Length: 179
Image (cartoon, rainbow, N blue to C red):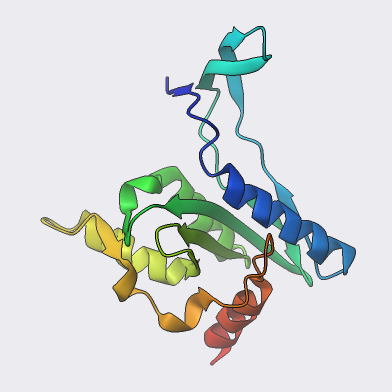
């Protein structure tokens, strides 16, 4: 069974930004998106700080967020990358399977990636992810993708403080599916 050793809540800044964005979208009546907690069982705790220091995952989680945007079911995962190359190993097969099944039921699935070295956010459509995923499964297939390989139109512009305005890119994704 997989275990988790706390390393300072990696990705928590990105998740905080997404959570604030989701709160604003909910207040404006634009979307209702919920953070899905990863189910863990604590093994060790620091009793002074009351923080979990070692735990194991109860089961495989699916994605970080699920909800609806103007009646459209959505699910997405948030990822951070500290270099201009994203490893496919950061995405698990059960997550890809879940996102594909989610879209087969009429929903939309995507990733929000923060390339921290250049402080850029990217909306990775499931179809684009699947191209990289399938490439990684080929013999001698590359197990990562470079920032230069990404569609420039899906780099999220207009990030302002703690807000990541990803709804514009959901709409762009919808438009590309209709055309």
